[in-house]
Image 1 (cartoon, rainbow, N blue to C red):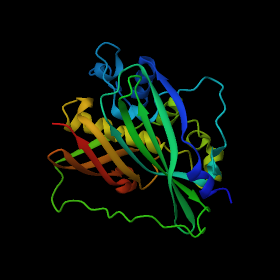
Image 2 (image 1 turned 180 degrees about the vertical axis):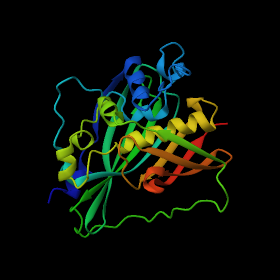
Image 3 (image 1 turned 30 degrees about the vertical axis):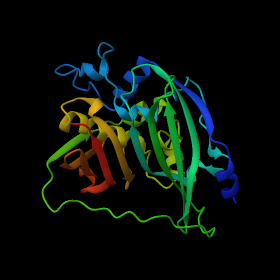
Image 4 (image 1 turned 30 degrees about the horizontal axis):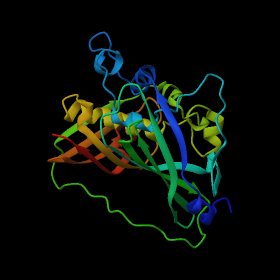
Length: 290
């Protein structure tokens, strides 16, 4: 069995040093479409190094930039877990930012398998990461849910059920995020070189008609929409975001996000207008600072 629960849970957290530069932050923002109307609005707060602010979702790629010619791994591999990339999907993501991320810096990032849930035909693997700055202060905490097809049925716990709901009223605001056919090719330069997002033949083997956009790209696109459309363009006011990835998005399609705000708590849901409102993100919440 590719998943060895005892080995996964008993392993010491893996620790790495993450380093990033202003150039990495600029690339991340550009991969999410910042400055796409540079003739009328270059969005200098995202695209120019002077007074650059950092979207909190940059935490998901910080220190993971790649070099030209580097080959991606063909499996998700860590103690107790070894699964072919064709069998996994990114099921959900949560992020808490403990203080604004600097435009360049270093962090010590520890990673561990926090939970493995048995869903019958699949397993859900929860990976937890915590980053601390050089002074020992926490920077961010993330939890990633990986859906591993064909890895369930091992007699484990099914995990908690989280009910999704939305208020019985019109949303406070509706935000649109656009992508281009190039979006996935740009986003993968942040470090995720999974061929599912670039190679049509690999995507077909995984059951998709063509390459799909990274879930974390959708995560970042919605975060940027919240900052720009709800938080007056101030990225430091978005302190948390948690979502489930409910459907794939093809590069060139768009995301429409309905937002309900109650003080510093935000509920949201995202759909794809080009697919008759098919869900993209569900069970989604954000935390904001006034």
